Length: 258
Image: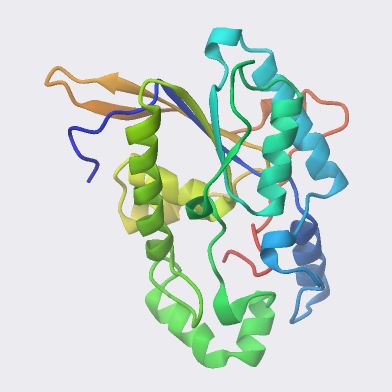
C-alpha cells in the first residue's frame, strides 16, 4: 500500500523508450520462428532504431509545446542506452524546462533482468528450456523468476524504492520518468495499488506503445492523503501527429514479454 504520509510530485509522466534495435530483432525472430534473437549486444547496450529516434524527438516536441510552467522540470531515466537516448532526445527537443538538470540515471528503473531466458523467443524457451516454460506456465509471469533473472514482483520491489526517492527529493515538482515496458506496468501497479490480476489484465490488453505517455496528477482527499489519479495511458497522439514517426509496440527486451 502507498503510505498515507506520501508526498508526491505535482505531475508525473512515465514514458517508454522509443523503438529499439532489440524490438525490431525480436519481432523478426518471432516472425521467422527462430529460437534466438539475433542481437550481439547485451540488453543494457541496445540502442534505438532510426524510427525510435524519430519517436523520441516527436514526444519531446509534444512536451515542448506545453507552457514552460507545465513542462517536466526533473527527468529520471533508466541507464540502458535506449532509454538514455530517448531522454536525451526529449531534452534536445525542448521537452523540459530551461532550468532542468540533465536526465538523472537510476538503475532501479532498468529493464527486468531475464537471466537464462535472455535472447530466447517464446519458441526458444519451449525448445531449449522446457522445464522453465513449464514453471512459468504454472507460476504465471508475475511471480516466475528465471534463474539469474527477476520476476515482476522483484521489479516492483526496486520500484517502490525508486518512488520513495521521488517522494523524498521531488515532491511538488513536475517529474518525467523514461523507462521500459514492464517498468511502466509495474509503476502503475504500485501507484494505483493494483493486484496481480489487475496489472496482468492491462498487460493482456496490449503492449505499451514506444514513447507512449502515461500521466498522473495527485489529488488530496478530505483527510489529507494524496492519491495518484491516472490522466492518460499509452497516449500516442504525439507520434500520430509527426510525419517521421508512428506508434509501435513490441516486447521490451530480447525475450518476448509474454
